[in-house]
Length: 201
Image (cartoon, rainbow, N blue to C red; front, top):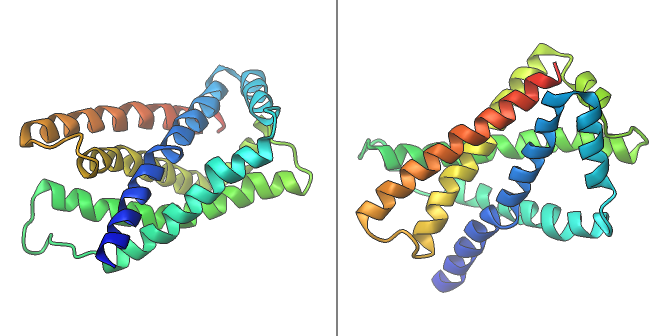
């Protein structure tokens, strides 16, 4: 049973990087095109929507991995032992924030899918105007801002955890360097995500 759960943990961390993490980077990059104007975003979104076998690719490479990652992540969040009360140091706090960001992302992604993919299924085209309308409420803008930061943090910190769990970062020095790299990734992707968000406002 322990070996089975260990395997699920490794699969969970792997899917968080490939394909979910890669999808996050592509998604933010496409959204960033909005900083160049409505036409640039519409062109980028149209190019993504015209990919062959899109529904199959989304199901296999995005929706199913995210579903497993979310369900098992919620299980981890409610069963993992948080040691912040006993050992208040950096990594324990990162551990706690990873769990909280993951729980928030379950809600955020459900809302985001409702506003975009479900709207598209009901006949609304995915374009610049859709996102402008979706972000016309200041409260929703704040909700999206928190969602973007949580997604980027969850990925960048999860990337560090992935490298540790898979034996890439073994020594304390390599793990420290990995922390700096994950921080740089967090800052860069946060910049891209926030710039894209405010380009729709």
